[in-house]
Image: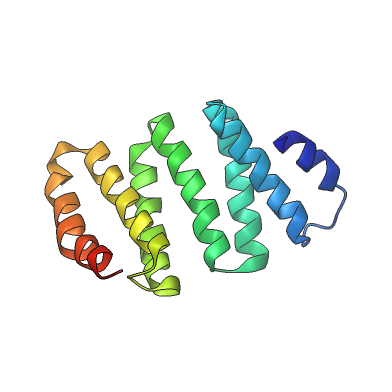
Length: 139
């Protein structure tokens, strides 16, 4: 389905939102089929396209989250951790600390902290206990 969407809208201008969305759908479809090496360049292209034309909003948070998940699953844990830190900071700045997406990106960041090194367990615990849990209780 992702491939069909991409082939359908490929002829549209690069600035077309539907074309960009179809590229994202293709990347997510490949990724969900666990074809991680094949998904990575498509997800990178989607992030680049969103960044180029739609700035730094919610669309970039979603596209970057997909890329970070793929990097993590491939085993490129350092890159995933750096990207997830950026995503969490952007989510808090754009959406606010109590938004459900910001809480979700914080949980993803804590997962990357734990995956990266057992020594970062304390950082993950601090993030979850001190920042995310109080906000989640209020929501």
